[in-house]
Amino acid sequence: MRDEFISEVMQRMLPHLDNRQLVDLQKTLNQVIQKYEVELVKDFDLENDGHKLIEEFISAKRVEGCSEKTLKYYLTTIENMSCSLKKDVRVIQTDDLRKYLTDYQIQNGSSKVTIDNIRRILSSFFAWLEDEDYIIKSPVRRIHKVKTVSNIKETYTDEELELMRDNCEELRDLAIVDMLASTGMRVGEMVLLNRDDLNFNERECIVLGKGNKERIVYFDARTKLHLKEYLKSRVDDNPALFVTLRAPYKRIQIGGIENRLRELGKSLKISRVHPHKFRRTLATMAIDKGMPIEQLQCLLGHQRIDTTLQYAMVKQSNVKIAHKKYIG
Image (cartoon, rainbow, N blue to C red; front, side):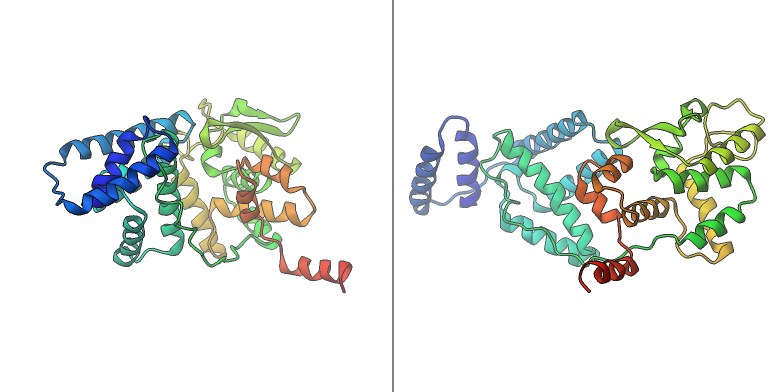
């Protein structure tokens, strides 16, 4: 309780003192407080203040352009931490968070990736508190990134892609496979497309990506042909690019595409067929053929180049060829 008392005093004096004065104040408080017992009389105001700060942080992230799905994940993660520790967020210490992350992993059997995602969100929140002068220093600074095992994620082979194309019974499904394979767009971006968004002359279209950011993606000649055949076969007037197969022909949703691809994969005995795998396959293929990583980053709509590198898994056979060429 003494540490919490000192921390709260320091936070409240933060706007009024410079760094040297704050250090002197902390030393004095530590010396004087030893003579006294500190007891918390009431804490409901602290809880309300803490919740208000969380809401302000979420509002700030919304202004930055984060999607509602991301904001909900942020809010749930931070509120779970706050409720578990039962402390005002301004007095939470590094040891509190270390214990919270450890207990969370044990109780939920969470992977290291999940724990690092929680750490990253908490780091963003406390860094914002620091930037806004609500706290002196983020308690997450001394909690380092969780080391995770880097697994090589699967991509489709050329044979698997052709097998899927040859076995699509509907023109729509063939157009979907081609669109995902040639553009590398996210499935969430594809379901938002309308017919008018396509520029067949330039073989391109504008998609709305994460953070409501627009970018141009490109499709190949085969995709252009199959898209035109699919649209020509349509009997509805729905503006959506891809719709359900039966009346009333509504815009197809992400779940509908995922289920359709999963069924196709099962029938062909291709493991783990899902939309995101097409995106990873395109990234890997582009890297293998020498596409500059900066251009691939732009094509995929990644804000950070590190994310692009995670998608692009270089084939081991190409590493062997490169070794012989440059070293062996």
